Image 1 (cartoon, rainbow, N blue to C red):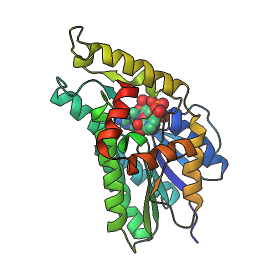
Image 2 (image 1 turned 30 degrees about the vertical axis):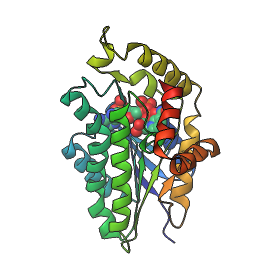
Image 3 (image 1 turned 120 degrees about the horizontal axis):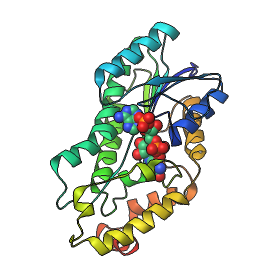
Length: 270
Ligand SMILES: NC(=O)c1ccc[n+]([C@@H]2O[C@H](COP(=O)([O-])OP(=O)(O)OC[C@H]3O[C@@H](n4cnc5c(N)ncnc54)[C@H](OP(=O)(O)O)[C@@H]3O)[C@@H](O)[C@H]2O)c1
């Protein structure tokens, strides 16, 4: 069985990415931890920081080329770079919606496409996308984040079928709430900041809840270890929801009829 040794990880400068770089390096892998900052939280043997904006395909292609020239191969890519925008669908501009899809969906797509020729040549490759439970559980005022993550999940699962027999496998990891810099980095669109918004009171309630849930969320290492477990398996699972409680939520989402499910979520979140 081939084992994963060389990993390209996007969004390696903080949160889930920084924890993943540490956990994979401790497991003996060499991790190119790429981000716009190009830094890592805790430098360690096996972690190589790299500068990368996933929205610039030429930078991604150059980094993939550099890794192959240096290491001779890339065994796995972890598409983790992401961000969140907040606000109601009504009044969100085209540019704001596209901004959300740019990094979370197209950034991951470009990263995967840059790695695929390398994986195909090797007859081996592992593709992990970090999506979110919000890919399957849509919440109010985060419609664009939910849709970008749902699109990425769908892409991962379509691709996993296309790659059958190639030695290349895809797995999407759907974290629930995680304590990271994500909460502070969240952008509020113009409609979210409108003092006369008809959604003002419900957005305030919603924001208090989601920010508290994120602050009280799991440590990023939980997700990092789930990533490591998948990379160490002979065959990866197609979809993973880390932690039993979030797994149970995922199960409920699948079995509950749509109308009562949305009514319940709306009561809790808005
Ligand atoms: N925290 C949660 O509750 C949660 C839940 C479910 C899913 N997720 C997902 O987990 C992933 C990691 O988020 P996190 O929670 O760890 O948040 P975070 O601490 O804010 O980390 C986001 C990472 O993405 C990088 N990044 C953002 N834009 C980038 C770009 N254009 N090019 C390259 N790197 C970029 C950031 O680095 P630079 O700023 O240096 O570029 C940073 O390293 C995201 O995809 C997020 O959607 C998070």
